[in-house]
Image: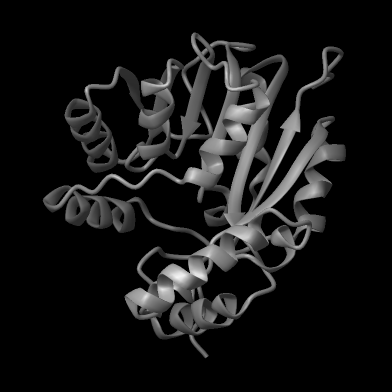
Length: 245
């Protein structure tokens, strides 16, 4: 059996984002954006938001257009190029930072919200990555982490692809609600919400069936079952006023 390296080399992301930049697409994660808006009662004008491991920055660009003051960070120059390209097309204002997520060149207690979608699963030891994000949060600020959910069929397919070398994103793991909840005690954070979103099946269906299945999926995503069965699971933590590092 092929031994997997528990890392996703920078070259993997540079290659992927270089391909993306040949045909830039704009697809914000609507479920993620809805949860962020709800945190602030749909009043995000002037809120300081940081996306770590931003990739294309689609979610942040959408939040910027809704009035937030947005910063995006990625260690891939090609990803930063994608962020800038989409922001220009969308006439959105964002600040971009090319940096490793383990050592972010920003001040403590700077942001109302720090979020990542599809980031920490690429780290065998994610705690330092999350600690750095918590450091940047204001007291009473929110941390959103969105990752692959462990208990679904796609996880099996992904593991097989990783073993055969056909998975395009290097090494990654996945999380359950229980796994994510453990971060709350380790980092002295308060869990606010667990959610689930998406399905690996939906893109494989014919267009007519896809539309029907999307309605069913939307219903499932609004239930307590979503974090347990959907493709991705997300958690939102709050940094308490008396947070101790």
